[in-house]
Length: 114
Length: 115
Image (tube, rainbow over all chains, first blue to last red; front, side, top):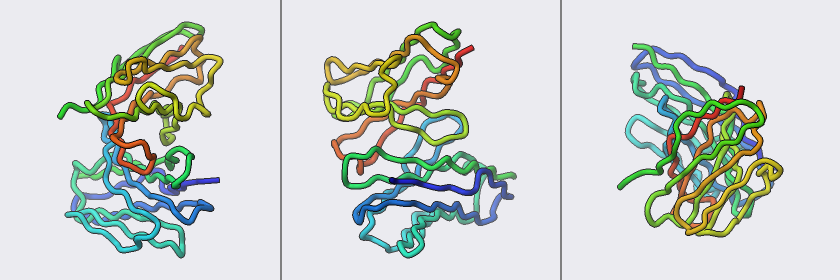
């Protein structure tokens, strides 16, 4: 069975600090896809990144970076120099190449304080 | 490009009443999803449509929930009769392709409170 665990329920940081959101996943499939979504107070889930299981290269997009490690089944998300606008709930999600639906973690609520 | 539209944004009903939510996906998106997000949890898929056909409704409580996408565009999710545990945000999402590995675009959701 597929499972996504986001152990950090809430994180609070001061503006300009770096913060890492953890994501650990479980799947029996060798081909799968990992996602991060951001949910601001408005409620709309915003797609941030998709990574397939064959691509373990880390990715950087502006202040965002992702560290994918198959050996530890983790797909962690780091925000560098956090800003107040980064305050949101962040979800990690997993999808295999078959017919199971996208499985979300419970989310991590990030609060960035000015 | 217009995003996924949902209405109403908020609804309060008493248990055993009925409620309906509407979703209009992004133009041209063949696949439409309804997710249920209970407070403090991640979204859970209720039903997936490909055009006007159902692809996956395995997690839809069919004794009280129903959904349709008659013309392959907009969709309606109905709950009848509602229970207290149905209090949640109902999110609609759409995607261009059929594979669940693609990017999903979400609406702002419809928040349901059942008293």
